[in-house]
Image 1 (tube, rainbow, N blue to C red):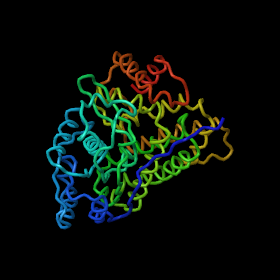
Image 2: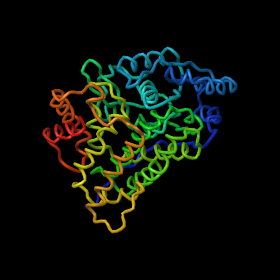
Image 3: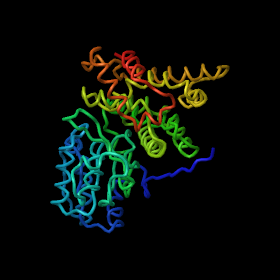
Image 4: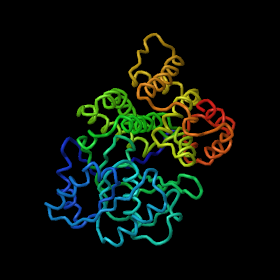
Amino acid sequence: MNATHLFQTTPRIVMGPGCLSQIQSEIQRLGCNKVMVVTDPGIVQAGIAARLEEILAKAGIAFDRFDQVTPDPSLEVAAQAIEALRASGAQAVIGLGGGSAIDIAKTAALLADSGGKLNDYFGIDLVPKPGRRTVIIPTTAGTGSEVTPIVILSDEAEKLKKGIVSPYLIPSVALLDPVLTLGLPPQVTAATGMDALIHGVESFTSKNAYPMTDMLACRAIELIAANIRTAYANGQDLAARSNMLEGSLLAGMAFANAGVTAVHAFAYPIGAEFHIPHGVANSIMLASVMEFNMLGNLKKFARMAALLGENTAGMSERQMALATVQALRTLSADLQIPKHLSQYGVKESDIPMLAEGVMKVTRLLANNPRGMTQQDAERIYLSVL
């Protein structure tokens, strides 16, 4: 049956080593003369915020800074950023950092001129109008949030991660300078890079995938699989860093349109309850969920083995699908990502509650290539305990 597909992405993408220097012309192109930089203390400490602000100051662009973004940012942090933007009067927001800073920048820009409470907007297409302009500058090759219509925030009271999905969240400009990722520590490179790879894998196997998203997802998987070990082992390798940033971008484009699946549904409860970093939570769950899912689309799971660099000569389709799962396990091991939930304090008695949390993430389970019950979810969690 022929289906109608809508493809959305950031309308202007600037890429390449040193392209941070073009921020002046991008801001001026948007017709803005004052911006608010949203970032986190680590980016400030690393001197990256100062590099950006020096360019803005030389160009005569006024700016304020909100730098209180925390990992897995809470509703409270988002509310603080919204108030800071209202007080600033800035016409545009620059999100500088990893996924947390980018999501807070997008949230503040979207809701600074809207009434109501944050909780009013969790869900799909509940935001009534566009917000202020956004320029997103990622410093990790991870979330792909520079091209997505989604933000994820942590509701600490309910111990849940909640999403706002709106086309108005798609940034005005994405500026990708791999030089900004050269200083990433190996463990951050590993966790964020695996998150990007998982975006590619899940969007490729999503029930909502179609040829255009498949093309993007496949290229993302190839780029990340071929470069993540080098970026992890030798963080100053600019070619590997550039390829990782491009892979993350393409995976973001793919999942923004095809959606992610059950790996993320499993990662949300353990991230919210046990504060496991998002990329690590996804990586711990990846192979077990993929092994469960592969029967739902054996052909695509088989195809991924070659994309991941496996020699599939003489293999049956099922053997290739299993090779895909094993390749993902081997990659996580090479990157020294933790394997077990128990390393973060998860106990067997927590599993039913966590599985219940998975089943609530209906938006993602609807994309999953294989139907899942709560008993399935419990078995998958137990397999990585």
